[in-house]
Length: 301
Image 1 (cartoon, rainbow, N blue to C red):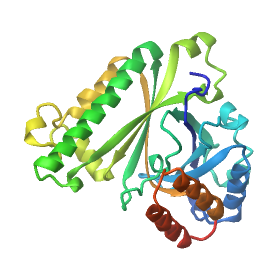
Image 2: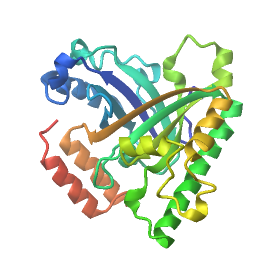
Image 3: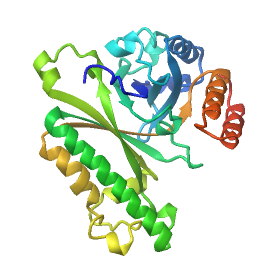
């Protein structure tokens, strides 16, 4: 798992920036911030960047740096040596910039909606769960969790189609499984541990923080699941089908939630990229027009 999969159609690097309270106004609104994003845009094969803000702390920022189609991350993102890119904002940070992981998936093309939170017209919440453990035991279990999540979403569809359950009743909006590549250039792990252990990332989407808390409470029934499926996807589905299998195999879990995912890149380059997606039918012209209107409301980055 040290290298990017040669079959991967898209790769994204996830970087976490924690700002000091006194420098809150520097986020997305300072010459130092623009200098950092300008450096970031100079990295070879960069596709686009989206910014997330922690649901619990607006000073806790995450950047999703997506690389063009099947391109590998640039050398500094493969090694984890990214301090120089964010040197202009280093005095404002509470800790060094952290490369959480590089993730890759096999979907065709790039999908900005995977890493933003506004696809449905309102800001949902995302959760990143990085799971590390023995690869031979963990990979099939995580694939089973991913499959169970798809079955759960199918049950929700049946609820909306046949049982008059509204989409706003959903708390959990789906999950994506990714492979984490290169272990952030961690040289401390032995070659044997590298060979036997691997990390994966589960990206979950939630309606809101309060609805997520409700969904995770085993004492509260899931209002979005029709009665016929309550036996299989009841109030403890998350605990039994997601958390328990991971915990039983002794894997380590790092979980992080965020919302307000937004584009953080030069406007003209972003529109040009989206027009390419339009050409290849990755989005329609209505979506592109809406996106351009949203960009017009923002100050140039």
